[in-house]
Length: 116
Figure 1 (cartoon, one colour):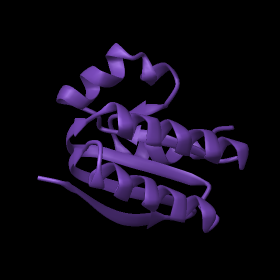
Figure 2 (cartoon, rainbow, N blue to C red):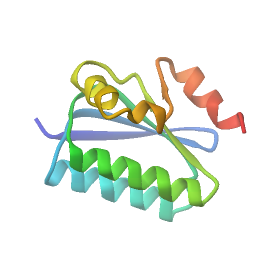
Figure 3 (cartoon, rainbow, N blue to C red):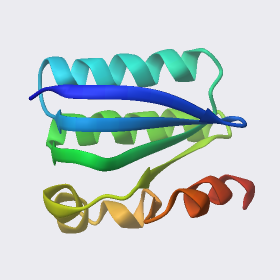
Figure 4 (cartoon, rainbow, N blue to C red):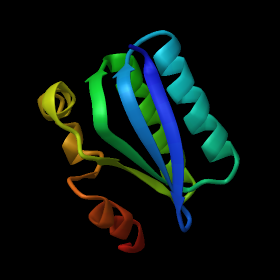
């Protein structure tokens, strides 16, 4: 199983629904390309919905952190929605929840962009 990415929008916030495995190679390349396209196109606020993501490796974590850094330099942000299982374990082990905001419900994630 590779990575499937579906895009939705809520106002000025883009939500990427990720499904499958975000791992080195083609899946990470697709995630990186999608995030670059959004950021280069003017998107400033991104939610990564991880509810159906079953695996996340260091290459994809690096891609997410790069996107967050890029968005922050453009006065935007990125947050994670519904990390669970192995994905949550990776985030907790690396203390990335201290760096990247994580939410368990979509309304809270969306509301976080208006709190500055």
